[in-house]
Length: 256
Image (cartoon, rainbow, N blue to C red; front, side, top):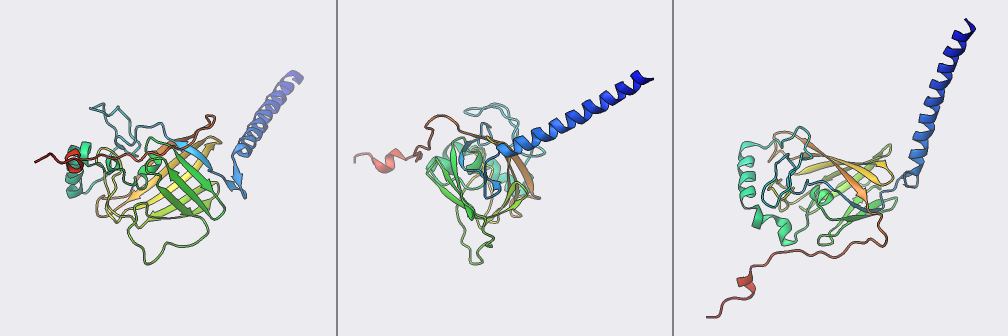
């Protein structure tokens, strides 16, 4: 009888010990997340390893495109019929008409999962994102100010963020319609509205989620999910990349 009681007591002690160990581990992990003024600090240079920029939706390998499971929740983007026809046309001409080939600003959310690094500088009142391609600069305001009422249509829109626990929630709108979402021709209009969620998985990994809404193009809002990794190589830094294509005959017309 005593042996049985000791065994049960031991099991309880082991279970309690494991629970406490897990709790201490979770606290220790949380402490390792960099913070600024008590909030997670996303400062650093980040980059995805996904193939999302080739095509957000699942796809097999094709010319100049590796296969990928995609990052769209549910697998497909819910286009309106007329918008889907335009997307197909974009796909057919993407080798020459993708705005990124002209060095244009990538827009949101493409600038986050484009396969080049970007750097975040964080302060209490805002975050500044500097992208390697074209050195585009985006500001996310976290000072409680609202979107401007007399907004223009900007390449990177207007971004206003707030904290929900340790998650940065960003409301972005007031975009133009000149950017694409990927190389496959997925696109949006100037009615684009993006709600982003930035959260640490650990000190060197961010999970980036976004809900994308555009009543002119999509039948309903849809979601993407991608992982970003911190660059920790010694002396790593952004390098200017002003990539664009030229029409040779435009700059060097044939002699008459």
